[in-house]
Structures are given as C-alpha cells and as structure tokens.
Length: 557
Image 1 (cartoon, rainbow, N blue to C red):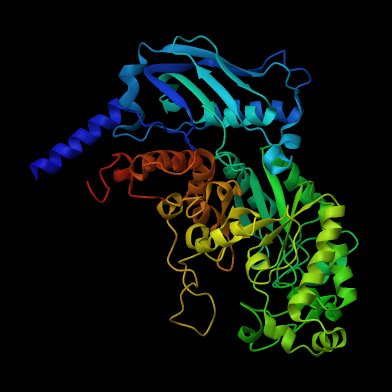
Image 2 (image 1 turned 45 degrees about the vertical axis):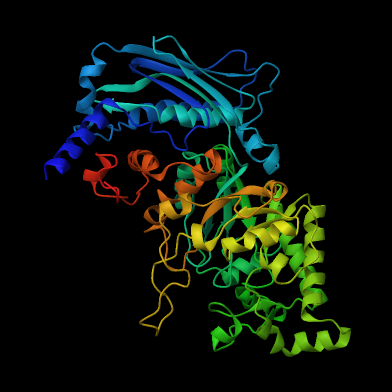
C-alpha cells in the first residue's frame, strides 16, 4: 500500500513539474524548454508583408487560429488543472505576436489549391519558433499549406489558467513535415445520411490532426443521395428523401470548406457492385436487383450490381463517373470494385446471355468494363483508386498509376506491393471504426460485427506501415486512413465513434511508427479534451482520474 501511495504521489508531482508535450500529431523534430510564456491580451497572428497577395483562405485561417486561442480555454491535464501552474506564471514573459512568412522565392497560392495537388506534390512542411524571452514567434513554410499546418501546431501549445493563456515549454523550436503524403478519413453517407453540417464538423476535426484526405463514400446500394448533373433521376428515385440529398452546391460547399482546411476530397462511386439503388431509376442496368435471399446475392442488403456485360450499362457507368468527377477537383477518383458477387451474375439471364454470345468469362467482362470507365476518368484528368479485390481477386488490367486501398486484411499489403501498385492502408483489422458494435442484421440475436473486436486507438497506433515489405516496396506506401461504415452510425454518434480514435492513424502516418504507446496516451488525452473545447464530442479514453495522472493506469503501473 505504501509503495502504491508513493507511486501516485510521484506521478502527481511529475505531472506538475514535467509538462507533457501536448502536440498531436507529434512533430518529427521538436525541442522545448521549461520556461513559462504568456500570450498578451492583444496577441495577434499576422502575415508578413513579404507574402505578396496572401490568399483569402490564409487570412481566414489566421482569423480562426486567433479566435481559437481565445476560445479554447483548455486547462492542463494535471492534478489541480490550471491552478497547478499559477506559481510558474507570476514571472513569465509575454508573447505579443506570431508572424507568418513564406520562404524566399515561394509563391502564395491558396491553401485549397495546394491541398488539391496530386498527393505526392503537396508541400506541408513548416518551421515554428517560439522564443522564451517574449520576442516575436515566427512560422515559415514553402507553401500556404505548410503555414496552415504550422498554425494548427501553434494552436495546440497553449493552456488556460484563470484569464491567462500560456505555455510552460518555451522556448519551442519545431521543424516538421509528414512521413507519408496520404493521411485520410473515410465516411460512408449512403447507409445513413449525414447533413453537410455534420460533414463539416468532421472536416474540422480532421484538420486539427493534420488529416489531408476526406474519402467520401457518398453512394451505395442503400441510397444514392448525390445529385449528379445529367443524372438527376438517380437521386430523385434513389435518395431516402428529397431532403436527404447532396446538391452540386452542397458538394462545392464541402469541397471548398475542406480545401480551406488543407483537405482534399476523394469521392467514391463504387462499381460494379454496391449499386442496387440504381435499379430504382434504371432497372435495365442492374442485375439481381433486390433479389432474395439477399445473402445469396450480396454481402449485405439490398442485392444488385451493374450489368457489366452490357455495352449500354458500361457506357452509362463511364458517363456517370465522368459527370461526378466534374464536381470534385481532386486528381483522384475511386471506382471501388469490392465485394462483387459472382452468383448475382450467374443467376442473371441477361448477363449469361451476353457472356455466351461473346464467349467471355465473367473476369474478362469485368476487365473490359473497368478499362472503359478508367479510360474515361483518365481522359478527365483523374487517377483511379480501387479496392484491393481489383488487384488480388480479379487481376483486372489497371494503369500503373492506379492506387489500391488495402482493406480486407493487413496481410494483403505485401501481395498488392508485389504487383507494383501504390497503396493506401485501410485494413479492417486495424482501421475500421465500426468494428465491435455487434451485429446489425435482424433475426440474428447472437450476431456480432464481422470484423470484431472493437479496434482501439492503441491497436491502430501499433500498425507498422512497412511490415514484410522490401525497401522498394515500402516506397509504394502512400499512407493510410481510418474508415467509418455507417450501418450503425448517424449524426448522433459520428463524433464519439470517430474521435479521438481516428487521430491515431493521423499521427501514425504523419510522425511515423515506433512511438511509445505509454508516452503517447497523455498527448491523446490532451487532444481529446481540446477537441471537446472546440465542439467535437469525443469519447473518453479513460476515467478522468487516469487522464490527470499519466501512467498511473497503465497495465504495468
């Protein structure tokens, strides 16, 4: 008992006198001191005059950062909270400004345009210096996107005690850039509908952990909420309700909102599977539409897949994808390609008739279908993104620049890399946020989710992006993402099912793997509490008692 008491006392003392670096993601190169530093009442973030024609979205980012410094009011997570630092603040120097500037020769483009560049062409690096003597802090970068990333970091440095906003780690020097260019979050808005306001809130949270890719799985077999110019009948007959649609204006709103926060939007129109809802407006294009028993024809209800042997359906699909691509400025476009049910086509008379007439196999027909749609997208300036089955299960002919999402298992990464395709980690055994919620299929009282168990932040954080890969294969890894399939999610639980767990992959792919989980947890607590201050309803990671005493609730404590 005495040993336990002594440990807890030591933990409390350390939490007061050895501040936890609260940045998330952890910068790749950081040095800090131990001096207290306060923000002056008139503290301001300004853009240097040398940044000619600073874009509007940079000015707006500065305004938001200034506002957050005044509204966060986060007390440090130590025993006593903000009161613990009052003594250290009595003699603290005062910081009055942060000045943003671009490196010599750099041009000030919009944050949005920088964020929407090809994934490996984005420059997110920055250098941040916060002196301890109260002289001006500086933030420099080669791009406005880098300045934005640095602003996010600067905003995480500060705590509140009474009316004082302060840090106790000055001086601070950070030289930072991401380990991987792709750091994403996927949201499915087809199983259940999410208003634009909820999507924007998710984008805010993404931006605060330096996620740079919103993968929008916008339609599926259950609903088609996207209004596509030239194909309005799809949403008119396929949305859950006329109020549950995304208009072209909504899409532009989401894309611009994300872009101003350093995030590109990757849209997905899954083909040829997951397309049952198209039968409501175009029954001629869908095989086994709503066939039962559904489990014989699809992975989940309702059944239905595009008739890939039909020339008319193939052209319809290519035209649809090109029309959707015009709504999204990203250089990438996902055509899906997962969970194709062969029995659906085996039982479809029209598909079988076409296969017999041409002498093609199902796989050959799939190959031809995919090549037509991908050629149309390439002509529209898009790089195709596919789920792993297109590479591993169906061996479809794909352009070498095609990007593969590895989702079924992390064990499949090596096989995709051996095929030479660039890849994004999206493994269900590490990054699926919906796992562990229990079975959602009715008349199945003992059912569990197919990807049990629940994937903790520690599980995803422990992932090794280059496990079992050669040095050359490791170069194919673009990054990774968390994913939320929404059979059991809606706006009511969007925040807690996503955050702060999704932040674990954000740091994994920004900072790189190999961090000590025991030292990581206090920073994630800190991030979670800061997100709560900014209106994100995160789920608690531990009892507050543990959050205030780093290490005290570790299994080995």
